Length: 473
Image (tube, rainbow, N blue to C red; front, side, top):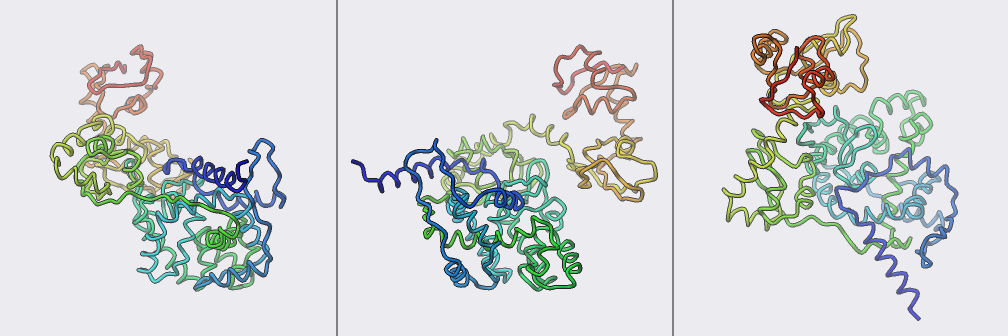
């Protein structure tokens, strides 16, 4: 009869293999609030699943509180790691309830912890801050939260731009492991300089320094996380206990029978300076590279191409760089053409695109709305919202808005002249330009709608071709 211990090992390895989904497809870490709700709604017992295989994983019982507290004290370096009921609840989560999540982090930690450690040392920050990215993103550089925070360190758009993390249709530097880690180090340094306490700095990283400052004031100017705990948002209350718990879980996984023999690794790689349009899939094929590996090395490039006129450094597998050196002109020439005519119009027409445009300031007047402002500058409402990080359509008088218009445009007069050059002498036929959509064209003519254009031209689809003639009047 087959040994039971052998069966357990086979089952454990099979489960690990099944959970090794492609890196770019991994889900981001659960939000702190979600985990807190799961903890409050679940019982402490592990209920059997009668649909599971007969051989189940052995889950040790709870260790004595004194033992956990002692283990945490031994792990403590610069940032305090106290033990209490709230910390214990999250230790239970990571070691009992969601052991697969902890295994996933054990596989991934080799990808980014060395990078984090390098930059934390350069900024003279505690090395244990590397665990913060686990709570933020599950070590997924492409993680996007419900609030639209992005990357390993979960930067919102405005905060990212403040720390020089730019994003456009082609690229989001919040997903760049190196640049986002540098930005996180700068931000954490600032927060610690404000609060002089690492727990408060971590809380501020989660909910903003203003939120923590208000909690301190409401608490009667108490100066520790645990003293202002009840005055913080629910998610932030869970944040520091989660952070402490994941440090414990990753360092004492084996004591809880969480064994992960596999580790995710990046291919040995080298840098390549790109100064022109580059199509990733074509480049990958011609250099014998797996496209997924190329994307994994460059998670911030999220359209599979680098735009014309933008100088960027990308990472490529070493063997691909060697092959490139042998056929450089042929490979780069081919990769500079494929898909360009299809991708560039999409990028130009994407909401919030600023390429080839100049910014003007608009101060909102009483009675103005986004619709009237968009019409004045011949832009879209969604563009204005993207440029100014607006989540809704409500704007208040005296608010300053950044509006990006064509570099040669003089607002409405130049736009009108451009349109007149694209219609026939009777004003009834319009010539489609690269990047045009029916929505764009409808905005150029008063009273014209998308449905009207489709009806006049007997169109069954919304696809357009540059040079196509459309009846517009």
